[in-house]
Image 1 (spheres, rainbow over the protein chains, first blue to last red):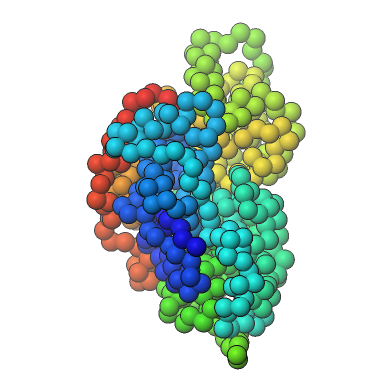
Image 2 (spheres, rainbow over the protein chains, first blue to last red; image 1 turned 90 degrees about the vertical axis):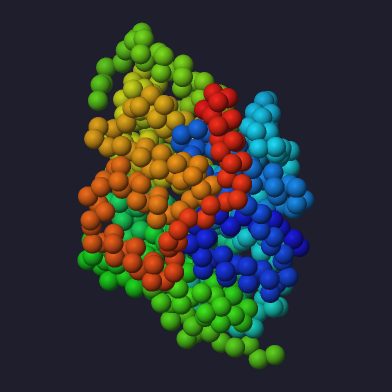
Amino acid sequence: MEFAYYPGCSLEATGKPYDVSLRRVFGRLGIGLHEIEDWNCCGATSYISVNKLASYAVSARNLAYAEKMGLDVCAPCSSCYTILSKVNRHMRWGSGHRERINEALAAAGLSYAAETEVLHPLDILCHYYGIERIVERASRRLGGVRIAPYYGCQIVRPMGRFDDPEDPQQLDNVFRALGGDVVPFPVKVRCCGGMLMTTFEDAALKLNRDILEAASEIRADVIVTTCPMCQLNLEAYQKRINAVFGTRFEMPVVFFSQLLGLALGFSVEEMQLDRMVVRPDGITRKLVEVTA
Amino acid sequence: MPSSPRIALPKRESELYSAYWDQARTFPDGERIRNCIQCGSCTGSCPVSHAMDVSPRQIVALFRAGFLEDVLKSRTIWLCASCYACTVRCPAGIRVTDNLYALKRLAKKRGLHPRRFPAHAMSEAFCRNLRLFGRNWELWLGLRYYLSAAPTKLLSRDLQRFVLTLLKRKRLALGPTRIRRVAEVRAIMDKAESIGEV
């Protein structure tokens, strides 16, 4: 199983632990990730707010290179995943769109037929690789770690291609199968505010407070996320949230690939859990080695 | 906010409308905004409607009543965080988020933004980053944004502490990653922008 890998800008810095843990997890499972050489930013929600055609064309450059590799794309960042998927939908819809994007790509000597699929790693793990096979490879049980599964927005919406937009289940299923105590999490698809943390901080702080509060109320040990933006907002702004709202959250927020890696036998350092702002010591204490 | 409906649109408004419909024809279901039944599912689903000056439902109502300029000057379109909750719930199949993107593009093009708030500064800083490096350098993006939208914020202890924490965890890049063929990115941007379809 081989994929073209499009990490996206966040995974180079703030989301680096996601990148490192995902590559290692996929490596251990034998799923090949081949980074698209010289990939560029997808433009996220910003460029599309200025010029849609240009934003799609720039994103399509990455897909054009993936097409040359002859592989479908694995895009771990929710925002990249949505934008790249939107490019495909746009190019396959109506008349003239494919041609106009290709007209722009031609300026760089490229072309894209819009036949390369864009997949999220969670989709790959659950539907292409299979949860049962993951469990077979696991060397640790998540011994009743209370997990709040947080999907955020842009992997289940707008297209809901691999899970329900209102009550997705894939994170729940994976971690339950690995022995985790996955708690019902009513805010699992509530928005973290994304970029609003910079542009409208008051509104974003409240959104994150609500999510952290929901996780505390059900006494979760950890919030597990799929998106670098959500992870940053929920974790790195926790101190600020505590100061503004007089709360005392100390809730670890980790990428799903990090927790999955622990179950597959990787160490805390290999999964980059030492780079988190809120130390997730509560989880590591609960891990149970599986004796073969 | 004007409350009385107008019958014939003033020239400025009708021109804005035709520019809007040009936009709406460039994405799937763009024209479904006509089918709104004013049920308010969008507002009820929106996680930030409490912070908006005009709710998403009201945006559509104002739009259809001929007050597009008021819509474009609202904070609402810039407060949308692209969570798509309204889009998946709209019973009339309106892609609210995509319509808001179209409104953002129109507002940006016409230089209209909420009073004393350069809401589009973030997207501008972002695009400049993309053109310069081909990738987004978070530190630079933050700096550029605050410099143009809220310079005093740069002096805030909280922000400085936030940056320091991430630096300590090696989760902020001190320099940009410039891609090797950034010229390709610029050529694509230039060509696409010259095609004129926004």
